[in-house]
Image (cartoon, rainbow over all chains, first blue to last red; front, side):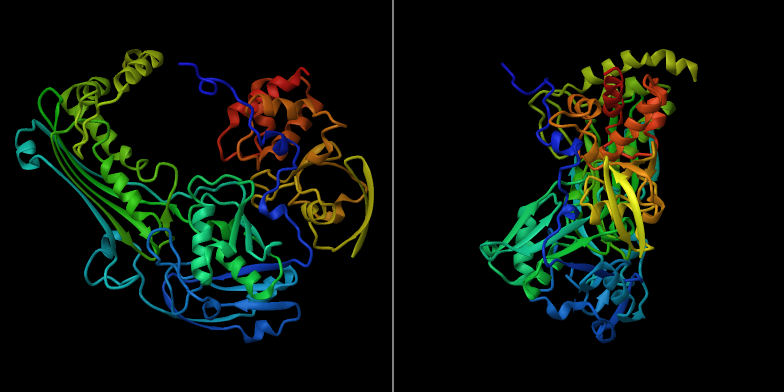
Length: 420
Length: 152
């Protein structure tokens, strides 16, 4: 097969504009007659709110302050429509958007933000996903905090553990992570030459953004245009809506270009994080190190909104047994609402957390059986023809063994092991 | 307002600036040099790096009035007429550019390094760009690019 691209170094089409500083990110765009927008965000994690913008509206240079009352359809969300464009009754996390100030310049925006009165009637919050699963826990949305429950049932784990020579049981926890892409969120909205509400933004999903803007503004999708500028890193953190609807709404109402640039601090508060996970693992193997059974419960903290919780926890569940063939498997992975920052997509989408659990289980099993960490993996790893925990038969190439053997060779693994 | 005179990319400017204006705002908002990027506003990320009188500075931490009578170089001042600076070419050739947001600051830190030390070791290169974060984690390619450019 002749390959034109694979295996060759290809010059990036955008490299020239980036090394010369000419590449435009949304904040680099300045338009005539442009206004500035700033978001007022919740300072508490769980409260009923009452908002009074009257004093801020009287400040010279403030054009308009948008709240939930101004949004035709006050909801959005990539899977579940559980976000409000602006909170109407209740805030569910620190950083929830409450209002959007549009003013002639940034200084005026800041002054107006300080003059919006928000009365918080604080209610009990829930910050531990295990607590949040209990019946009597405070509810973030509706009458249950459980968003999603994915199950795998393969074989009979009771039988598997009964036949196991060694059983290892541990609970592993991972923490929240921010993408910290280098370019904080920014955007400019305007009405284009064909009368469409246009938002220039750095996004991972211009087509989804358009759908969400059109839906919230109750407009046909053809009347909305999203232009993806250069994106200063994303890593999953730009999959959810941030400022897109706020800007589109403001331009639609005011008929003027509006620009918003988040500070680093606001960026941290505004966008999703990687799911912290609590992973309870029980793994059994026979005398030779062959895996016989796995029971895993994975609880993902989705924070105040679902975002991609189902997709992420499903992926964690599917990957819970790792690249190993196990005849008896029971996996439960559960996504739970709390009043923490919301979590969503980040590099690996749930596949990143579980290796921390299943690989440490492998090392501990090996130690207990007097095996080295390589042989126990070679004994159990997926090969062509293996059946995964979900019942998939791997019929295509599975070069895992070759990969591991090469790594062992290059790392001079046996010598390293001796050194310990 | 304060009146200041300064040289930016070889061009003289005389302007009035607000007392609380930062150098980055002066460069971006008043002079339209948007190749100066703002990543953190507190001197951690290095995206706003410019060269001021031969030294790299975070333009978010320098007040505009402090740039009075100084000589500033931004990314826009690097390429000559129709030709790229060797560092710019090396960044393209080595694949050292991904999202591009750290790139202007990286290249300027590298330039300041090479101006002082034309033949740095790999360790010196890494130290030279230690004030610039790349979140696409392309450091190896960036070091390679600077290594390529140093002889040119």
